[in-house]
Structures are given as C-alpha cells and as structure tokens.
Length: 129
Length: 464
Image (cartoon, rainbow over all chains, first blue to last red; front, side, top):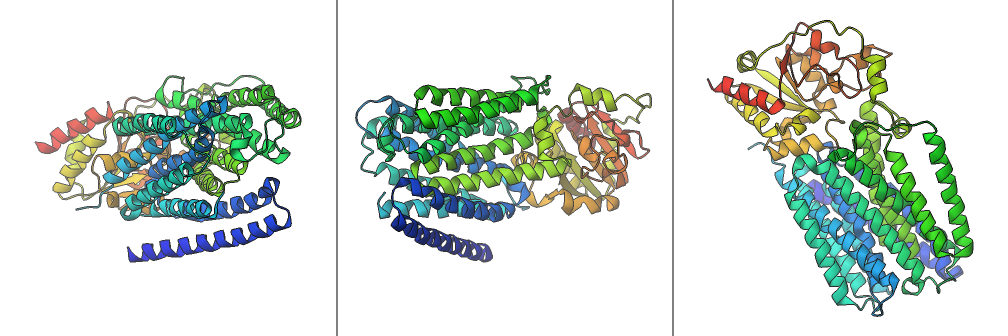
C-alpha cells in the first residue's frame, strides 16, 4: 500500500517535472513568436510526452482490471466537455452555442456513465476472505 | 487563459494519470476512480469559471440531463452487456468531438481562433482532423455496439473492392480537408463529417463478433485521439494529455488482444476472419468421430474426488449468465476439499478483462482468478480442467498444426490436466471455425447443454 502511494507520489512528481519542462518550453516558444499558431509545436511536445506517460502507466495496469480501465478512460476522454462548455458559454443564441450544449449533454452522459459503471465494477472485486 | 486555470488543468491532468495508475492493483483501484472524478470536477469547474462562460442555466440543464441518463444506464446495465455499453459510450465521445469542432468553426471568437471566415490555417487543420477522428469514432462505435448487441449481424460483411473503397474515401477526406482549409466553407466541413461517418461504418462492418475486443479497444483509442485533436484546436494541454493517455491505453489494449490471438492488428482490421469462409475451408474434415459424452452426475462425482480443479470460462459462460451457478459449484467443491482456481485467456469474452468482471460479480475472489501465463504450467499437476463456454483458446492445434487458422495463438494447456470437461451447447466449432482435437481425446468428457443448466445439475449432484 505504502509502496504504491510512494510510486504514485513519485509519478505525480515526475509528471509535474514534465509539465514544468513543457511549460518552460512553452514560454520560450511564446516569447520567440507569440500567438496561437505556435501552440502547435508546444502541443505536439506535450502530446508525445503524455503518450510516454500513458504507455508506462497503462502497462502497469493489471490485466484483471482491463475492463475498469476502459470504463475510466471512457469517462476521462469526455474531458472534451471543456471545449463544449466554452462553446455553450455565450449568452446570445447562436448555432455554435447549441452545438456546444448538445456536446455538454453527450459528454455528461459519458462522464457519469463511465465513472459510475467503473465504480460498480471495482466494488465487486474482493479478496479471498 | 489565466495562469490559475492553467494550473488547475494541470492538477486535473495529474489526477487523471494517478487514476489510471491506481488500476495497477484491485486494492488501489477504487481510489484511482475517485482521483478521476476529482480531476474531472476540477476541469469542469475551472472551465465554468472562465469569463466567457455565462449561460449557466442552459449548461446546467444539459449537464444534469446527460448526467442522469448516464448514471441510470450505468447503474442498470448487466455486466454481461458491458462491451456494448462501452462501445455506445465511445460513440458519444466521438459525436461530442464533432459538435465541439463544429461549434469552434461557427464561432471561432469563443475559442480565440480569430473571426469567422478568418481562422488561422493551423487551427483549421487541427479542427478538421479532430472532426474526422470524432466522426469515425462515432459511426464505428455504433456499428460495434450493434454487432455486440445483436442488432447487426456479428458475421463479417465482406464485399469486393471494400479496401479500395476505404482507400478512396480516405483520400477524399484528405482532399476535403485541404479544400476546407483553403475555402473555410461550411459545406466542406459537413462533407468531411459525412465522409468520415461513412468510413467509420465501412471499417467495422467486415469485422466479426469475436474480434470485437480488439475493435472496442481500438475505438477507445480513437476517442482519445479525438479529444487530443480538439485539445489542439483549443490550445488546451489538459485535453491533449488526457487524449494521449486514453489513446495509448486503447492502443495497448488492442495490442494485447491481438497478441492473445497471434494476429496482427492489420489482419484484424482487414476483417473477414472467422466468417463462413473460414468455417468451410478448415472445418470440414474428421467430423465423423464421436467424442465421449458424459453427464453431470459423472462430472459431479469425479470433481468431488479431485484435489485440484481449474475452471476455464469463456464467452459462452457470459451468454448463458452462468457465472453465479459456476461460483456456487466452485464453493461446493472447495467445501469438499478441492483447490479451485480460474484461468483467464487474454481474449476470453467480448472486451479486455470481461471475464474477470463477471467472476467478480459472482463473488469469486480476485486472487483465485489467474492469467494465462500465471497458471498455464499448473495444468499438468491438476486433476480436472473444467472448460465452460471456451473453445479456440484451448485448442492444441494452435501449437502443432501450421495450417490452422489459429496457429501460434497462445492457448491454455487444459489437455495436460488429468481429466478435461467441456461444457458446450453442441459440437459446432469455435469462432475461428477450427475443429478442436481435444474433444476426441481419451481424457475428455463432453457435457452438452446450456452452461448455466449444466452447472446447476452438477451442483445438485454435489449436494447429494
């Protein structure tokens, strides 16, 4: 237990470091040019680093929990709700706002559905008594 | 974006990483899920606090409706139907990605992407790619859902020129994206969506029902890449990081499933495996032999007098909802002094880890459930192997017969056990259409019937 939490701490520390590095990189990029179009290089950096984090974290998932893993990833991929909220945000009624609202609803189904079903699965896993 | 919200999004990202990390062991898994929930809450609250977000009432309504629907479905769904549920959920992520991209295209100012008709080229490309992946995920997942649920036939649908058509569609999507980036014409946006919808359908129809674990994992991966694509459009690292986590998770699961079948990912995608062609090409021979048939009383008697028993469940167990009866049988055998364990093949069931969840649902402790490489050597010291609803994953032809469709696939060596019981509905060959040599061995007894019924009959036999 303590070993796992240590590992977790370690991992989050590493992630923090990675993010810091990425942030530094971003500020250099922004300084040199500025504006949205330059986010691309920064974003690709983050993407590649996050793929590595994902690779190592997912391989450490025990095969018995691969179904809950799909449940959780399903729920967290609905983080696109962030984009949906921004689109649905403005007061005035535009088509874009309605697209955003639909997306908020769809993502909410997934967020709640994903976390609830994962919790249901995980609560069933019990050790020999 | 203010520094504060950047930091909050970073915290969310770290929590998501920790939530996946928690799944490394059943004891930390629930905490992991909790981290995920906290991470999502932070992400949503941070976004709602954004000065551009003002229509709280409408957002709240959409969120509550969606949340209720999701919670109700997730609470009521039967564990045997998990694969279709996950497929259905993936389709929603895909569709949401399409809507977010559409919203960004029609109102770029809300996302700091310039003004309508003057969106920078980079953002247009990102938007178009995010849309295309989202749309493919949407229709692909719907077809996968249909196949798993039985709305669409599980048989692979193959026609001439299929791959050529897919290639043509793929190229036309690239062409459309180019045109869209030059003209910024809404028509092209929707054409990209339509073409991607079509290719999503065409990609999944040729794939057979039992290959669905790979496909469900692949679509899981796509839903992640769609989120990452939208992350680029919004210049949001949280979406990129989460998308990459989900994308790599799905990709790794697809890889594990493919390895479990000794097939390349490409081979699965090309589809057509295990359809009627395979059945007719490699099934036909040596079917005149009669396997030895046993009854549940024999099985009950023999297992009662065994010291070690390994149960090998497969999709047939899930279909018959036999997990509870099976666990009861296992309990009685344990009470009679036998050691009972369960062996899970990586591709058993219709999604990765499906059997483990079903056994957990039936209150089988997780430390009695072992993976192929953990338990495979123990079959030779085992008195009884009880195979229920599995077939291809036990077929020794995978090791010996180079011409077999399943040659090279890792199998559970049930043949090494002292006595093998096969619970099957009939003599039909497995998904791969390959006859299982084990049925005709001297130490094999077939128990024909519905998996649940057979277990219940054995329980009666054990209680007498």
